[in-house]
Image (cartoon, rainbow, N blue to C red; front, side):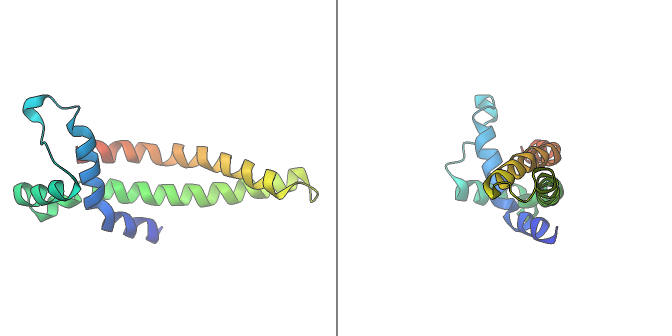
Length: 124
């Protein structure tokens, strides 16, 4: 949980720039920021909105990362335990790992997408 939260806090300025660069083309021409790249976006955000604006949406970003990490680790381990018990000791390790990974991917997406949606809306 700490690694996800701390890492997303450190990376939030780049994530903010990415979200704004992607959202810029969807805005009406009069409202576009017309950033030329990531560094231009970061520089202009600091100049126009202040340094603290680089962490807009920081709390949902951190919450998303924590939810993502927890959902991924817990669901994978749980699915692997159930698959191993259900298929027995003769089951292929590849099948168990692949199936557990697929189940974990769905759980991770379901667990993190609400926070991702909120984060993106705040950062736009």
